[in-house]
Length: 397
Image (cartoon, rainbow, N blue to C red; front, side):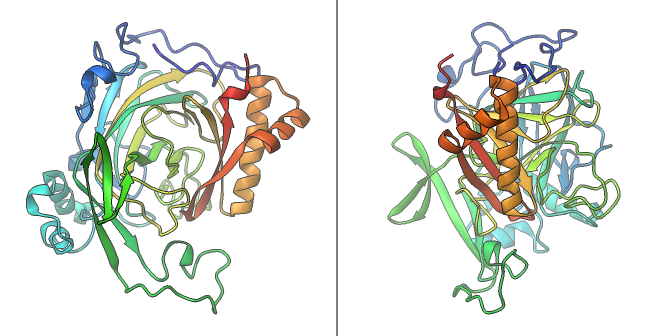
């Protein structure tokens, strides 16, 4: 199967090849698509093919957490591809009925998925203590994955399911929240009415999908899943864990989760440690577009469909999520404090450069300081994420 070789092959990694037993590799010529079809052949706007499909029906969804003992919604072999439908929480979790709630924003009834109505109708029976508000699809069980392994998640496609999304702004939301670190009582507040929500229409212009923010503002869509996760190992006292066995979905962590790293889009591969048999993969919190930081607390919250290829690598898992695309290795640091997240990201970059490129700590830190960009990925989900972008072009061999 196609697997990016850069992670898991350096001197510090104890990783075997992708599991051979029971693993059917994709057919030849399917580097970017399902069996027999490439992305170019699928065409712009065409659904990307996959071996399996997980719809966003109520039984396949969780509200605000990552169950560690939920019956898998699908079992796949390493190397297979899966299309996963996800729902935005906008219109699906409020008290008011979705057609009325979304209609008040300007969404016509015919643009509201039946999945939204069905999920909203199922909300009363769902546990809420210790949970957050994200709608999450899964879990998908990947055969052969065991604790201590690494799950490779190749993001083949991310596609919009509706021509609209919602963004929220408030005078005391996001980085302006009174609970935000560094808040002072005399900080000024923006002149924004309470409960302000922006319906943002999306569509195609000159071959690209854009968000129509205003008559003279078009923002290119770059859809991605805010949440990519494996089932965690929650311990009370960790961020987002107030109930035994329940990891709330707001803060990300080593298991991935609500990373909100906007570059985890189609063409990127994500690497997560495995904590439970089968890894138990979850996806959700779909975003049509987001800036680094997600400073208002929300992006364009827009229902998406993603196509993923999974691979299991045996051996020592990464301590924090990692990813890569054609141009960069992405190494993440996650902490309650932004300064600590930056420190952690730098530490992880130094570790990566030692493991994968054989650099000493001194040389690795020097390279990190002169060639690696450290970007604030998100700052509004309790734990904060800083990502080190290591350019691939600097390595001549």
